[in-house]
Length: 254
Image (cartoon, rainbow, N blue to C red):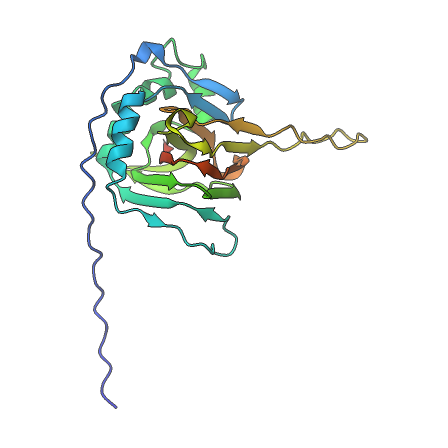
């Protein structure tokens, strides 16, 4: 029997980040604002990106090597059928954070568009001191018949590169919609399912509030809390056209 040879681990091949198009044109920051769809859970920023910028990005993203998610999910995972691309790109995450109005809106620097919270209330809302976006960038494309079944988003521990690197954890999901019914995408809404309030002692159980349907809007950013306090949600089936989304997460200092 020949002697066994130890396997030499093969280092993963570093994939260079895409040559992302510049983030122009953008709307004036003074025209943008945070909107609470559901208190402490769901917040939107309409028109964070212009329709022209979204159109440029959809054309660019089609050139990326997208892979289709497995039809059979792992045990405990929700059924998701879409095409995706994923890359660790701290530079693009920082550009998406600081190169748009997102940073100033979230941190309350934009006086007109902020939620009017005190610094303590702001940290409580976001789950701590926000330090940027998750460098892990995900691109989602949903075509006719594709969807993301009901699920919860978990948090992740990440490191924000810099001098020095910042240990962080994710607290809110960021979804940036690039298409909508205006571009020919039918369906694909993000739907949240609030839980009923706990009944008082001796009182009948209350019915759950109706689902919260967030329609797709070109250039709109959707932020929703994740982790232990995540609301059950789904991405409805796309009935026609294509749904394109850029995904990252808000990160707070650990």
